[in-house]
Length: 295
Image (cartoon, rainbow, N blue to C red; front, side, top):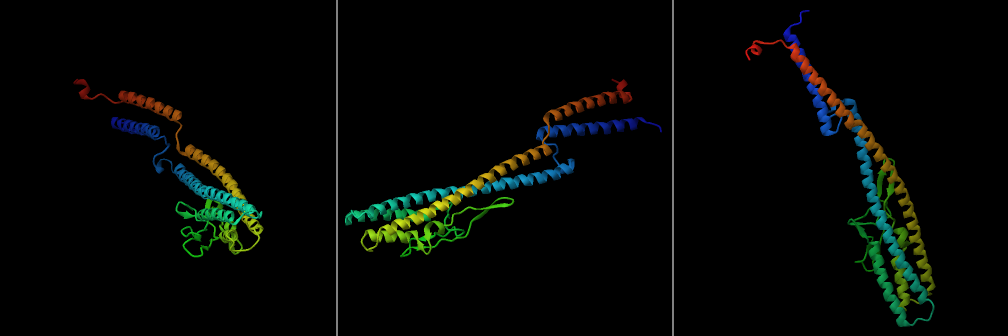
């Protein structure tokens, strides 16, 4: 086959274009830090990258969910601590009132203090976080204790606020208000009202019964906080697992898409040398024209 000058020129131009394309690829890789910029550059790696990125997004969403659960649990624990403090104070006052040495005025002073503690306990039962009532189950827009009614209406929803914290894990973020503020059909606030009535002389009953009643509600708070602590421990384990999954997913995604800078720079320098060699050899291959002799 006869090799013409045009064939040599076309081959040289095609090879130079390929060389330019290779250098452009390495330049883009250095500029972006990625092995490929379009799925067509590496379809297999691009498909894997979609899967890795989806997994990473899921982990990040679960981490946001765990933060929401933390918000519920931490605020619930703080509220239960406040309830416990109030109940302990009422119990202490009940013990004082039961010794038989206090006069009518002193008992009325105790009753006034108990009234204030009751008001604080009602506020705690109606505690809102992010504009949600945390002790009323999924009815987060309704206060469980209606103080506008006479007498006050106490109705806690026992449904659970379930939040997904992992692919196969869910946690109830709320504390059931019935287990804290109710003793059967009688609410904590009804029990406190009976104690106040005894202090004011409206009911002639033994003060020791009020001490026993407070002990029941204190046990309720202790049991609820124990259950809350178990949830916190499980949530911590889930958070640790999610953190490890995030590291693995990020590392795998990086290995799939991110370049090795040292390797890419070496490839670019090598390609530049090859390109210069191609230009040098092409200059020798190209035949001189009449213009070269007219200079």
